[in-house]
Image 1: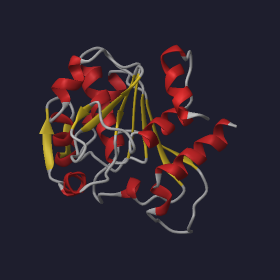
Image 2 (image 1 turned 30 degrees about the vertical axis):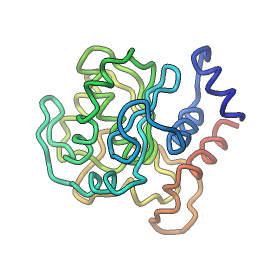
Image 3 (image 1 turned 90 degrees about the vertical axis):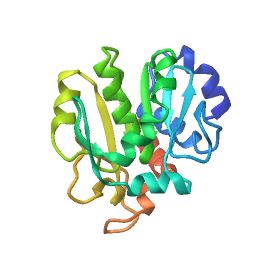
Image 4 (image 1 turned 45 degrees about the vertical axis):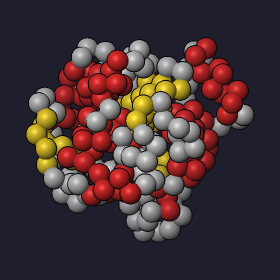
Length: 207
């Protein structure tokens, strides 16, 4: 697919598939963010009616990944401090924009997308979340319970044997993981985490 044409058609698209959201997550690594600074953990891209959060590709993002302290957030319970701080730094600006019809992201961006989806659900404007290869972000089940009660649909993936979806140890995800793709290696690995492999896996499902 020609990505430029895909973006041109985004506002007019009646339906999008998971692979389309995976392509947006991949594209976000190449584009300047709509909200936030390029060299930070706090970045959001607006693609048509979709809000997309970028994954870790710089020092500040990796530092937020490593900040695994529990943080109490009203309604959401105890969550990964680094992911919440990465989102909260740009949250006021994100919320000042027109509400998205969907939210997506990869890796760190997937965790931020889930949390952002929860915030929109708390505000009464839920949108579906497409979270590709999210790391674990919960210390309890409050966020999972909230997403269910607020009717925030979350599609989260684990491609092959992606190790990132299995860490940090001791934490959980607030949603089920959908297995996609074929493992590159017969054990947990970081290669299956690559967004390009995720796109290929989703393309195979959509074909």
